[in-house]
Amino acid sequence: MSLRAAWPITVAAGAAGLLALGTVAATAATTGARPATAQKWRITTSVKTNGTADFTAVVATGKTTGWAFDGTGFDSAPIAYQLSGGKWKKASFPGKKNEEVITAAATSPSNVWAFTQGFGAPSRVLHYNGHTWSVVKAFSAADQIEDASVVAANDVWVFGGVVYSNQPGLGVWHYNGSKWTQLSKTIQGGSALSASNVWGFQGVNVEHWNGVRWTATSVKSLLPTQSKQKLNHPALVGILALSAKNVYAIGNGFQEDEGGPVVVLHYNGSKWTRVSPQGQFGFGPGAGGSDGPEFSSDGSGGLWLPMMGPIESSGFLLHFAAGKLTVAALPVANSKITISAVSRIPGTTQQLAGGFTHASGNLGGNPVAVLLKYS
Image (cartoon, rainbow, N blue to C red; front, side, top):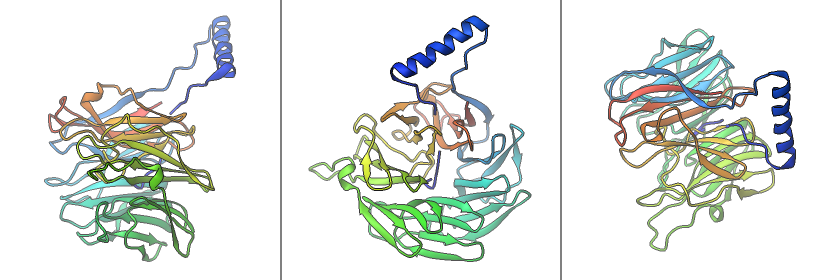
């Protein structure tokens, strides 16, 4: 979540895995049955709009339902697309110029939330009740939403902070169905399991809310190291709580020129550890436009992580599984597609994703907003 949450298929290893694969192949050969097709990413929808084309947020609300939001503000308002019966169609949405949907979340097709970030305009919270969209909250233009998490219609969390300074940002706001309450002035992002079990982050600290207070835990020793010249500023950029004993956090070294490296941290209910190697990936999470990634669980113990690339270069999609980070194979050359958001389809290992295709090495070169599915 940058407020985000989602995860692919892992390959079985060892003798047991090889035996299982061999049994499947033998059965297929003797019965004539075709072996299961490996899951892969494919583009399902392409939308040619203007120079701001980009599906900046996407959320799956069911196996054949969901929402996606196209447009990065300025000259035109963001456009909403609804997935129904497996088909995407443009839908009514009260978007405004000078804003984009920075993230979206849902608990069902009739409880969908979109969170906007303004360009000199207020950040807003919008809700879909299964029939219509309505504006629930507008923050000041100075307080920008960076992340959000939805547990229920009466348990909604909004986060926003400043990465490199001690100046307060939006902080943490909680909506209980009738009123909004600010619970922190500094926490940047978070992921909620309930009103009394919320995980957040600020700088090098993981924060936990127990319904009464926040408790900070430093994970500085698990993050990429700071250079002797202090030209980089390692920090947390995302967190995703799947259960009380299964919480992931993303760290970024923020190196001055090449960005990154990116690391994955995990909490098992008692302590935090680093579960990915460090060093092979520059630049970092945040392709969706915020400081943190809109990453998701792959449904089988791993993560999908959109990555931003160098200025004017395409981003790429990482998959974390079995302690390794690998670049995902996308349906067009990685140099020509940038993924901004991912969302796991509930109850499956399938994913929805949004982003845009563009000329190689040029993010503004004839962009086409695209929606993808991993299945």
